[in-house]
Image (cartoon, rainbow, N blue to C red):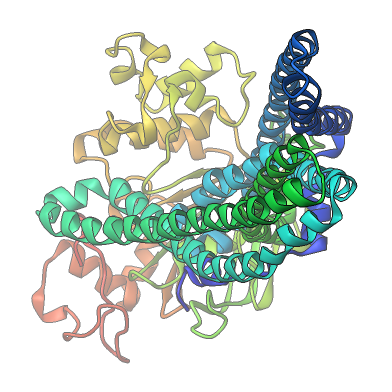
Length: 626
């Protein structure tokens, strides 16, 4: 299914459930909204006075040559304009302020929800698409709040007022003006249908554009390495041109609709001049009445034009709010629950008392898509303080086992226990506080080195941070940096080497003082010299802690207590390094392939993931190449 199917859905023009939820974000500011509504109503009444003052000036000033009356009307007209300007300014300021607050609240709610969603959600949804929710979709709702909600009622109120005044002035002329209403209805209906499709196309192409940009910016190193700049530029030109054309198409419909509406308005005015002029000559209505009626007719079409524009805003807002609320309604990961809105979570250091760190997998079966099993009937135990390594070919399920242990995914069958309690009975957030995880590609956030090392607990003293860095020998390069531990870290730690990022990840894990340590190929990007430096730190880091080590470099796991070999998602062997070598099984063949380079022992050509019975599985060598 296309990742942009959601963007392509036309959605409903109006959904009262969505509107009710959206208006809920206005509730904290309802006093300001009511004030803006009152200001708009007063402004609409003030604008009704203009044509009546014109009638007064013509009939009682100009026709009677009464300069005093004419001067009074002119001053009053100017006063009405000034008041209308002031009211418009106040209303705009109020609603812009309300709109900015609503945008802030929505973005906070969306960001809060994104932090609570399970990792499987991010596996299915491109980051660029989610960025569109936080940025463009919220902007659309802001436009509805600032120029839609109050203005909608103001236009309806203005239309009602104009109709009442026109009826009182001359019912016959009102009938003449209304003769063009069917034409207005036809033009507006056609415009709505066309622009609805156009805006749907704009949304789809915008989401595609954001996703393409995010993917290429994130993978810029790969783009440049493979010399794909020209090809990616050509693809971007096509995508960008599609987005441009979709916007131009929407602008085309606007450029047609509003002049056509003006033409219909001019037609109505010409009919009033033709019919009303005869009334002035034959039936005795005053010239001032005719001029006032013409002005009211012109003002009658302004709210209609504005309502058509608000219809487009409403339609876009319904589509955006549906996508936003779908995201907000996505079931959250219970382990990622956050404190109440506005509250700040207090850091909770891992508590070693009462937590032993015993890990047990019993008959665990898991498939990411529910069908293709990555793990099947996996069972093993890690006793408290024991150091156990998971070894196997790429795709054998080692990292998946860690993800299940941390509660990022749920197994389809079997049970995972920590300290003899099923994972479902744990407060996963509390469990994760006891686990230190070091990944193959550690993630560093923008900020300082100290803030990254204290990521688990911002209250950690500087001494604890520096001590953790010294333990893994990260202090050697940190102290050479301008600012030392306060040195700036750019996005994703782009200015550090892969080895330096991993040293910082080791220090971060040690600073948190976890009871359980998980190393997921944590030394794969560290050169041999650096690896030798941190081995001593790793031994001290793992001492007294339950340690689960995933590694392709078999040299890093020879000192562990036990090795569990995974093959095709199943546990095939378990034992110490010496025992497994003596058996001459899968682990022994992995060891021979990695260190002896005996090509006769390599598996036959295949897809690199599966090996038949009696053959050695594909493995990653020390440099990460299969």
